[in-house]
Image 1 (cartoon, one colour):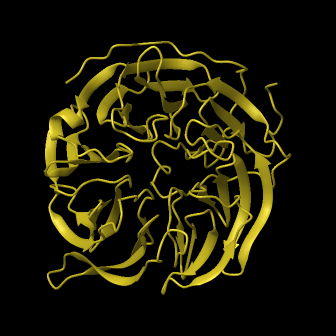
Image 2: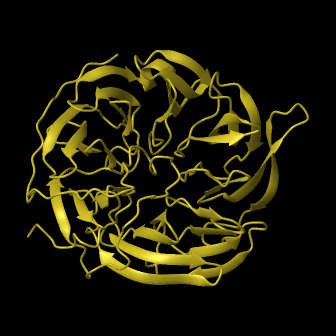
Length: 445
């Protein structure tokens, strides 16, 4: 265990009160990629077109740098960041989702040592059953009372499990499954660890693989839950109750592990893709004993990250939709693939300017897709095998340089969509904007 060294009160600027209009299907965004960890926003009544070149901002608050995206639950927004002066600390912030008012704020000493890309924490805060779980870049894990920030329990996972630290630190957001909090950390014989979510005690540990940055997901397969983990050695299906292995498909890196996207599934197939090692599509099957299994459908790997087949994804997780797969390649190329073969159907270069690691986060909403690109733009579009159809585009937030000091900065953090609003961060601020038709007037200057 370790002790905290700072507890500070955050501050708000330009944060007037506004009313969140209740929607019939309003919903929170309590974890990485939304309630089901699938990047689907299921609310109704959202704008059909953005009102202006700059989306009206309801409130904005000052924060520090970090790669983690916001999460929203029970009227609160959670985000993490990092400060280096006067000492190196990671911070966990909680704001009122309606006004941006700081509710609580906690920080702790955290020197990054050999971790590259040092802007700040990577993993989104996971909120469940009145608790907020925050996992920092070096493996410091906190369970907070989500309402007031009181520490329920804490663990230093690097100290406890001897993490073989990935070059960019710990990036996978914790996953709650029943009474279990599951983390992917790459410890010795503990790549994946399940803790009791109430007290932090170990329930099981599994795999001796090194970790990369991909978040674990839960799927249903052969009539039972399966925990899917993409390690730096393989895509693995585990029994979430005890960590035993159902299946394993090797995918060892050719240069270095850069698996960042979350595995994508439609219940029948499972897809992963990385910057150097291309794409892998698996079929979810059942073996002769009636247990979950997989078989390879296709594997596509270009000669290098600039000359790619299929997809060499970096940060943005693709969409698997029937016979088609939509994703962003290594230099920002938006592509449509035949999901059955991996062959390219079309490529579009207008969603984001082409650049190494250029990023787009894609969130499905009914028959459209909300796309947040690294220039801080929000795009409303349709994706089909016929092409990329842009409906509307607006500015949400400005790029900043702490995450990447190139091309005038980037916005790499995944936004949250909750209760009719979008929440996004850069290295300087967290903003909230309405996406409801009747609330499109800015209340800030």
